[in-house]
Length: 497
Image 1 (cartoon, rainbow, N blue to C red):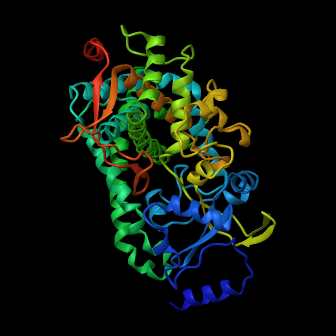
Image 2 (spheres, rainbow, N blue to C red):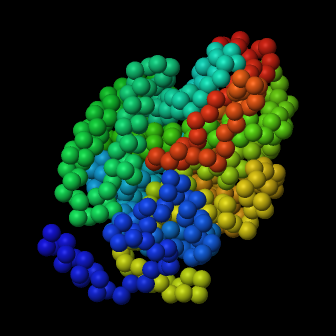
Image 3 (cartoon, one colour):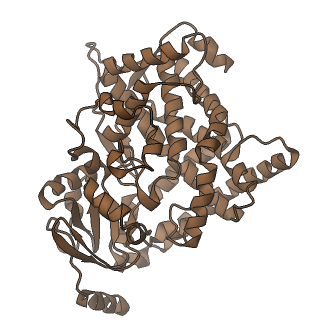
């Protein structure tokens, strides 16, 4: 207790000037004001305090990047200072002190991980994974077809489908529905979302409570070790397949066969965890998409008509570079702008003390300041987007031919949305995520018409597409939807895939 008091006394003597923000309560700060939808709260506070605000979360001050100008000036242009990772007692132990890219601090190790991951997640690599994604998409559509029009909350179906796809892409081993391996990953995924949830991380906000974290850390380490054993067994199988020449293109195989990928197998496992973690955001995006399409049948039918015009109804859609679906591309770009599945991404930290000017004021922040980018504000409080609260795919017509993953690496002001982040910490798997979303969406709209379930009086039970349940991500609200087959050949073609 004494050393903590000395630390805070010494720190208080330093002259730092934070951006403005709302007043909070003693000790608790703004914790009770943030609410259940913090991205909306931060966006609203931005109207008063500007594009860069400070909120006090317990004993910690967080700086919220709340505008495109702040993101460009600080996260991009000052990325060497603003793109480090915060120290976190849970994630540090789960990632073995910062392995696996997502939790790695800036430096040579981070650069190596990023180089290795970019190569195995490049467009060329993802093209090689496309047959695996096609197969798992067909399995998912067969599950929906078997409902024969009965209503369902589609999140679980999408989540399991995408986890199967990510395992298959990660390790090159086909996963069928109800495979025990899939259930192992689903269970671990749900466990870790709970372990990383805000409600279990009080010691991060109140350092004086750090003595309470021991049992939590031990539990996280035990779960990490069990899951690493799961991956290790599959890596061993993959290595044998590579030796026999029977392997199929996959993420881990690309890395194992790359002589420049000088990482250990335990580091590879941490990268595999990153691939699986991405399944949650994609499942949330797909669930939000079907809610939006049910809410806007005119948009749904225009997209379905485009897909049918390109592929017909006598064969399943297959994506390659020759396929041109400009309106469907616009729908997905608008989905990621309008209903971003992860409004914050992973937090940043300052690599060292920084003094800078922003919006006519000079601020000075200490090393390790926690920084959070509010993607919701960038999309909904941005003059670039006319009527931002309206779902309008046509706003992207001028960039319909350019994938969002390509635009994310181009000029900042020309980007269609900011869902993949920016700068040094931009999403490494953006090409894979975008392709998986397109593959599922195209096959789904080729096969099904989507509608809300109805009540006893025949009224649609609608759900707000922007509504959310906040856990570690902004999950879509529970909903009940029908998936009606669009033509007679759906069952036979899906069964033959």
